[in-house]
Image (cartoon, rainbow over all chains, first blue to last red; front, side, top):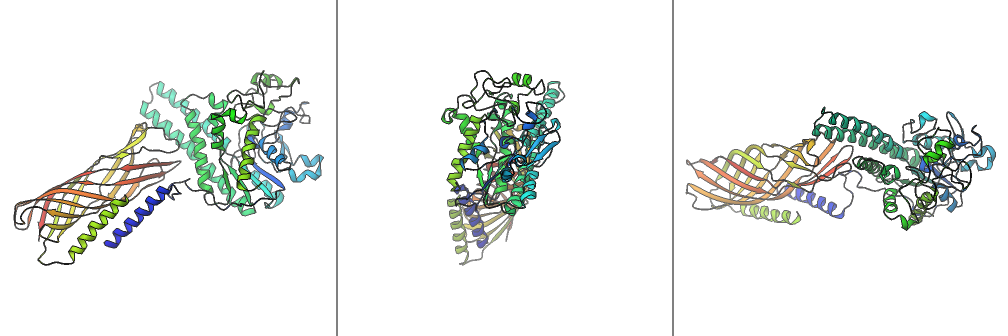
Length: 395
Length: 214
């Protein structure tokens, strides 16, 4: 008996010490951290990026052909306010590192080519390692815009495509993984539809207030469960298809809070916290799945919150109004694009296909459309990414 | 928590040391009855991704069978081990998530070891006693409809009791006691998200029944 009591006391003391240190608690998912990533400078020859529209360097440019037949010149192509000098964060990072990064695939509506840059400049074949595509999800090939012709190759396949082409990752690859936003949007859309129905039923007296609240809670839990699955799948691919295939310098970025965007600003007060919760759920399981893995988890969620709270610190003057004008884009695209997608937004002064809002500045306004940054917004992202990479000792 | 364990350890060690020097015929007492756990639980709230602010839960009361065994160390001092059939405890959601209803069920196995001091003459009919000791609570069969995996950590804490025996015959009588037990636990429920709460059960227990002394 005496010994047993001592054991209880030991267990309790150990638990108390763990809790006091704020360290990882094996019972609490997401309380651990990645571990074992390199701390030495890399000699990088390529940036290999996987993700969605935020990292898309021009997959859908052919859809914005001025001639309307898929050929250059293009008036859009990136999810930002497009122009001859408009770049997204991963391109800015490449420039900082003295590298080039080009789309791994380009096309639209069932027709696409792999490594398009190599068609005209074969020597650049090693640069087409930017796999991110607008609309892509983690695993599900049915991304946002798929039915409208977007490729939306999921991250699982993006990684598989890289392995099919190069057979493995190299120690000289800087691997950037940033996705899951579209899984959040899909699940948020499903939740919103269910929530609307619940509210309608409650208003019609078919549900009591408690029944409606319970149904809403369950709809949210279902969405959270789907995002848990997506995050766990992504960390699975990182483990088995990147780290086990030679990936050495691997950065995984978590998701920014989509409610802190112009899109988020349009949401009713009751829906906003749900969107935040879905993002946080993905990030929770992402962190949990990366626990103990030799990667760097870059906190874009925290970084984004600071940008939202202190725009002036980052040289931004407007973080609520999209720089692109949906009405202008609708006219420019002959009525085809009604949602103001920045993919079709050009900011070149004086051109007839300029789709920006009068008075907008794509360097100081953060957002091009409801969720995508302007070149100025992308510069904020790339600046923090470069700072972090330097802090890791990698650059 | 730490200091409680140390104190409790000291109590047990003292009792055991005392037990090694018997100089008279010790009596042993077995008690059986019912015990009511009257929870006065407090939590620091229930937190987790997707859980609205103000979410809380409250632990309900429970009644179960009381069993104890006391070994007399000295005419006034005994060491008592209290056991019981683990009762089913339930918790219902309160605050902003009250609509969730019953959110947790569990059984608590809660052996308590006490050193009792009995007042009055051993021959007296009514003998009040006070006790101080250590309670260990382990939660089993922890279930919630809202998570796939739920853990309630073991608790070790102080227990104090006040009671009285009323002798009805040479070997038997009735007893009643009231006790305050320090039971704190951390709840971690893992489902689509991770819920956490620190629960201070702060139970008062009320027991009564019959004893047999031999």
